[in-house]
Image (cartoon, rainbow, N blue to C red; front, top):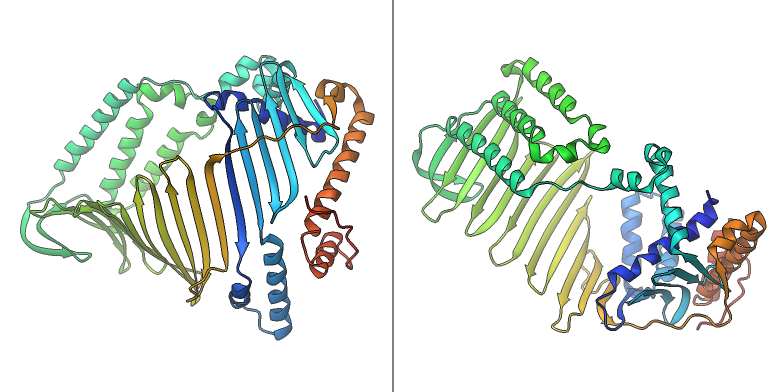
Length: 480
C-alpha cells in the first residue's frame, strides 16, 4: 500500500478519473464562479457581536477580539474560486481579488487520468486505469477487511452497493401496513363533536377525539416498525452487514419491553384529536402531559398549505408553515442551559428559485442571513447570501455564486514534468521525498501569493500566526 502522501495524490487522481462519465453530454465547458466580500464599514458591528456573545468583560480582551475579527475579515475579503468542467476535463482556481492563489486541473480518458496543481508545482501526475482500479481495491480492502481478505474487488463493491428492491412489492407491503394503521386508528376514534373549536389560532367546526393512551400509541408504533422490518421487499437491504450491525430488531424489542413494563399512570397523559371544517382544513393534535407540563405535536393542512407546531416545555418550540403559493414561515425558540435563542425565517420558493431571510437572536443580540437563488432562462443559476448585524441595512459580508456560466479550461503547463504514478509507487522513499519537496515549495509559494494580496501589516500578522512567533518578513510574489 502506498504511503499516505502518495495515497492523497492517488485519491485526487481517482476523483478526476470519474469526470469523463459525468461530462459526456457537455458540448462546451461549463463554469462556476464564487466570491466572498466584506463590507469594511460594518466590520466593527460584527466584532462587537462576537465580543458580546463571548462575554468578554475587560477592555483589553475585547480590544484583542475586535482586532482579531478585523484581521480575519480582511484575510477572507475577496477570496473566491473559479471552476470549469468540460468533456473529460476539470479545473479549479482559488483567487483573492484578481490574484491567483492556487489551482488544480485534471483530465481523464479511456486510458487513465492526469492531475496538476500549484501545490505540487512542476509536475503533471498521470495514472493508468489499471493503477487507479488497484488503488480502489486497496482502499476497499483497508476499509472493508472481510472483502479485502477475499482478494476480489467485486466482493468489496458488492458489500458497498445497495441492493435493488422490488418497488412494486414495496408499495404493496407499505399499503398493507398503512391499512392496518388506518383500521387501528378507526377503532380508536371517539364520537364526532360539532361546534366551534379554535386550536393554535385556527378555527374548526368538527372535532373527533382520538382515544389512544400513551402506551397504546407506543405499542402501535412498535407494531408498525416490527411489520416494517418483516417486509419481504426490504430484506435485501436489511440483510446488509451495515444494517445488521445496527441490530434494529433488538433495539425495538428493548424499547417495547421498556414501554410494556411501565405503569400507564407513570406515563404522560395523551390528549389527541382530529379537527376539520367546511373549507377542508384538517388538523391533528397530540398533547402529552406529565407533571403539569405538556409536550405538543400538531400537524395539519390549512388553506391549502401545511402547518406544524412542536413544543417541549422549558426547552424549545417551533412553528412552521408552507403555503400553497410557495411561501414559508418559521418561528423557533430554544432555551439551552439558560441561553435563549430565537430564529425567525420568512421565505418564498418557486420553480425558478427561492429567497428567504433568517433573523437569529442570541441573548438579545441579533443577526440576519438573507439568501436569494434564481435560475435564468439561459440555465445560469445565481445565488447571493448576505450577513447583516443587528438593525444594519447593509451586509457585513456577502457570498455570491454563479453556476452554469460559460467555462474555460486552461492549457496544461508546458514546462511541467510528467510523472507516472506507477513510477512514483515503484521509486520508493527517494521518489516520494522529491515530490514532498515540491509540495512544501508549492505550499510556501501559495502562502506567499496570498500574503502578497495583503497589506504589509496584515502579511506580517499572517506570518506571525503561522509561525507561532513574532512576525517575519513574507516574500511577496507578484499577483498573476
